[in-house]
Image (cartoon, rainbow, N blue to C red):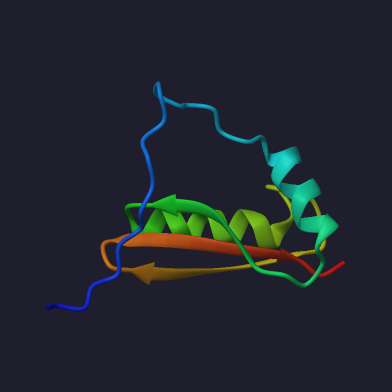
Length: 84
């Protein structure tokens, strides 16, 4: 039997299109300083890199945040944390 990683989850009853605001994300990161969180999933490396630049420049969430991006399969993830 092949060993694969699946994520088991029931689909929501309807489409969910709400996206948390930058303020909500920043507040959540500030509440857990030093802990990394995935803040964005994108399909292009350039888009991920741009998001990282905005976070680190302080224009996305304000000052005091670090960010990195990583490719996982065909997806680019942006990770961020509050460092003060």
